[in-house]
Length: 127
Figure (cartoon, rainbow, N blue to C red):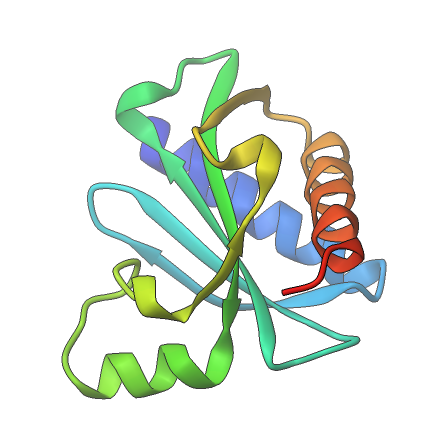
């Protein structure tokens, strides 16, 4: 049940980001967890990787992790046979609020707002 709810949430987030002209949902993948990759419109080389954990989520809140990734490196890593969600070498930075995981309500706008706040923080810091 949680898998379906998180998957639907990530699709909603993708639609919201696309409508807001922020990013597009590039890939949605499910195994034990749900992975969503959103390519940023202002810099399509960068992607937000949002990961939801059904086993750590409840009816009220979803457990999320997020990080900024390099699209080119992800493609190179996947060509080597590394599975989706395990492209650790492609991580540019982890989102500060999401680094250890964060429980949030299933509120699309609030989740996107929090992701954008974290992205803004990362953009202010030198790499």
